[in-house]
Image (cartoon, rainbow, N blue to C red; front, side, top):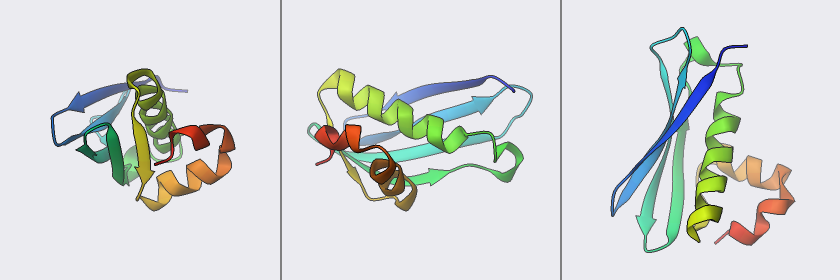
Length: 96
């Protein structure tokens, strides 16, 4: 399995997590809007070239880990993030 590197790109109004998969130039993204310590996860996009490798799940896991570490909460507006929250009840403390 190819290595996936996740990075966070943050600003005062929002940002995104980016996933780079070894051997591909395609980038997966999970974007969010910020209001104080509340992150509204609004889009998850994984190009077909890197699909089927668990990239979207890794992006959501990074979002959750980052929010937990930084004392933030998440509004799962994106349908993929919403579904991930349903699959992981242990994340409920982060849900806004």
